Length: 71
Image 1 (cartoon, rainbow, N blue to C red):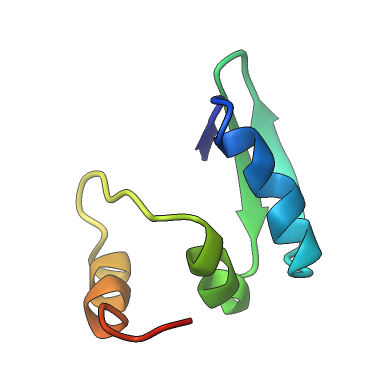
Image 2: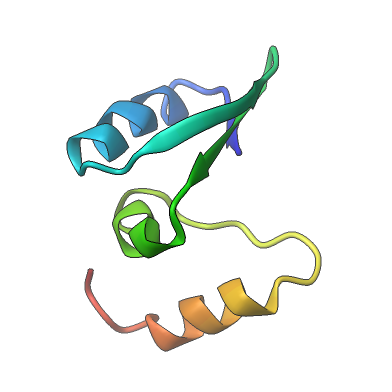
């Protein structure tokens, strides 16, 4: 999910330059939700800082595992 701000509007072209295939799921006035392959998570993480809401143990493990690793 991308919340519409000036900085987030540049994210989609950057991800497309990294050959991340995005599929628009839904689009609203202030946010857009895209689907991407899980195999592209490291490419996405190199551009976007993940925000964790609620219980998402897999993402927490990924962030902890890659905390000191440069992508």
